[in-house]
Length: 265
Ligand code: HEM
Image: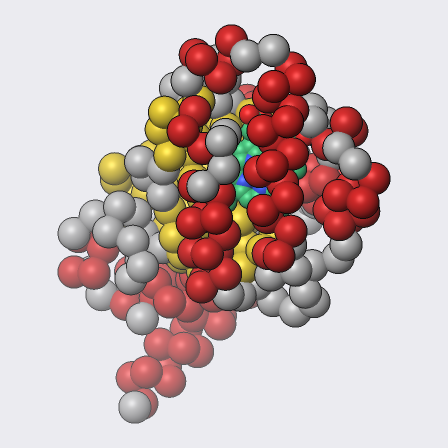
């Protein structure tokens, strides 16, 4: 018990020291980065290597503080979200979502992260990037459906995150705009019952990766998300997906301090 308390005290002291040496920076305009078109989203998932848990707690805490330092240093240019996948996914332990107006700023963050004492333990990376864009099909949809899309989602925390990369077939891109628009309207109609419980964000990746889209969701009701995907599998647009997932990333939305606390245990 005593050693736990003294480790905790050391942890608090170390946090204060690190925060004191990290220069104060103005945070990037997070709301803008998360809501506007023309912003890059990079998803970087990593596993922690086998040596991580073999280290003593003090060593782990010291290394976790380098993670905190790197995030703080880059907050001026990029918006960084962190997710815990460990325990829910065997593909990765941690996921970073980085929003930036310049993709090279996301790269700088990831280079510093991987070069840090903590980053030396990050292996098996899966990294993909996409771009937020103005909606292509929504403007042509009926007003009633547009109004449904604007309805606010349920207040309160949405603890789960799901990220699904998607690639569509050449047949899809070969269809004329009207046909694609009709199918996307059907796609949107079946999602209406889930608008309150599933929050979504779409990134376009064609040409930036071997993908066309990165789909990102937050929910407090995984059962609703499961039913939503089953409903979407029935619409005419669905068979045009050539790749769905691979990987599908499932985890929980966490603050950086929560991640540090979990990984310090
Ligand atoms: C609440 C749930 C959802 C809503 C409200 C929703 C709504 C929409 C809307 C309105 C669009 C058209 C965007 C535009 O105009 O450019 C769209 C596109 C798309 N959605 Fe969904 N969606 C939902 C769930 C999902 C799920 C679960 C997936 C698959 C995992 C998915 C995959 C996609 C993809 C890949 C596109 C882009 C398609 C293309 O442009 O060819 N959506 N969604």
